[in-house]
Image (tube, rainbow, N blue to C red; front, top):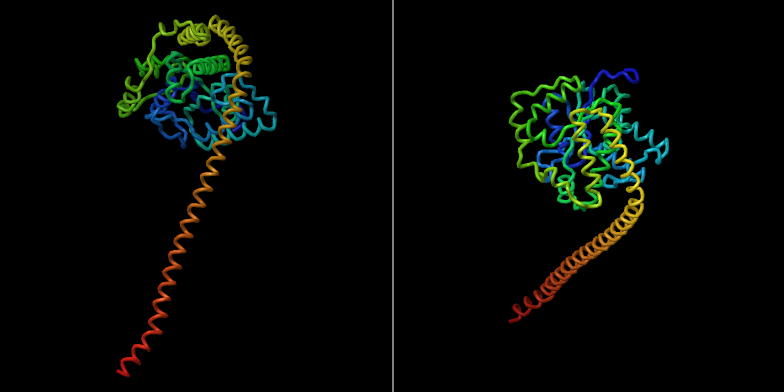
Length: 355
């Protein structure tokens, strides 16, 4: 296969955490797209499964860390900051992992929320291994996302809002020249068949569900599993980031009907520049200090665990020594008894003979 020969299809679910990405990924897989071989384990926060490759998530975390970021850092990411050698290393590692996870499947679905901030990088890699990438950007009310993150990860609502802005703005900007569509959380919950049909028509991909998979699909789309439901009215707050949330959410919803609308793109560019300016200044005050405190907590925890292990080791040694002491005392008593018998028995025998 020559470089750039895109004979296969990759549907990339490019959504913010807690935005219905798992449900959407499973929907596409049940309609014929291959999942990765080694998916992340289920969790109480997502009992129906994440459907993303565990190793890829770990690799993305390492790459973000080398670029001076992390998954919950709402500053922009510059991959060039890690240097060309390390960038080549991660490109090669991701390429090899994708080949390993999907073999040579003709139609795959890929989801890992960190890719929102790495979309162009991944599109290049997918092209290199022969895939035409199509991006689906699921959109969920940012207030619902913020509350869901707070419940799952203990993240403050303000940080959750900024994370939503960072992920969706980066994902939208990076995919403008690529094949893409937007899917609202509400549309997915209301009529998954219509959403699947729209995705297939937009991308020109055959997606057909097996009738036997319908019960599973209905289970994944159970309204009871879709917690933290909020309406547009819930965005009418006066918080620091609420105007950005309202405007960004409105323009993204507009792109659901017209994914390449220039008017929405222009407005989102302005919003992105404002968010970038704020996050750069505020992030420099926030994340280095947060990292310092977390490092101090980790060091203290490591020291405490080390001391606890040492105490446990000494306690074990004391128990062993105590057992050895008891055993020695028992041997001494046995020897005493044995020696006493050997001395007194002949004396008793002589007394008996003389009597």
